[in-house]
Length: 315
Ligand code: SIN
Image 1 (cartoon, helix red, strand yellow):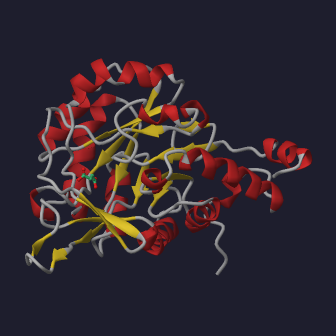
Image 2 (cartoon, rainbow, N blue to C red):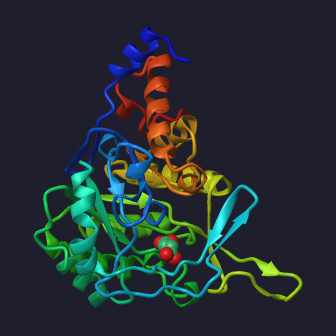
């Protein structure tokens, strides 16, 4: 139970963050793919209190995704092979976006494609979105398409091509990148050069589970992407290395964050804001709880502005 003094002190902490041209009143967001397409989580928390809601990745066209089973719990995490199922941008705009906007949330739309042209079409379908759509997160790093063999984010040139092709939309672009490459810094630099205002680090880690009785892969898609607390050190390292190499490139941190202390760790590594993913499946109100706890953490540690944490790791 917190005292009135603690609550008043925490309320005075400046929680606003700047990500390129986007100013958010708070640093916590849902991670793409863990909070549905619209207002689903509004039953559990006030979505307008978050920095933003990031919706599950959408392509220009409706897409059925991978065969079941699609998720499996692992020690300290989960493996997914959803395969980017989605209704397509136009149907989402018509059926999901209006209700999401009514919650007062700021919206970040995640888009994906199989080709540069696909990404361009998805971006085109987002033209003239309502002002509540504050940014587009370009997902270049899903490991569940075509057996994980085709990740734009493993190639600086392909990454740059996608960002150039989506820049026509005129909304801030955040490039969601992959930890499954030793070229992460190079890819992040290419994304920045091609117009990304920020990078989102990291998507899931390539993984696989085999059912020892049937001797078959347990997930319908074969392999999958590992998320949850197990990958947090991978995220911290990726964020740190990119922040050191490219200090002017804002980073949205994601990967195994489930508590305020986890969020502080990602920010000290270099993140300007933090997304919560797998923890939403454990506790749907996680994002709001982490944000509130982060505010109190700042107060109890004498941090008047949460943005001061960014890149604050000492060497
Ligand atoms: C999926 O839908 O397969 C997950 C999305 C992602 O990892 O980017």
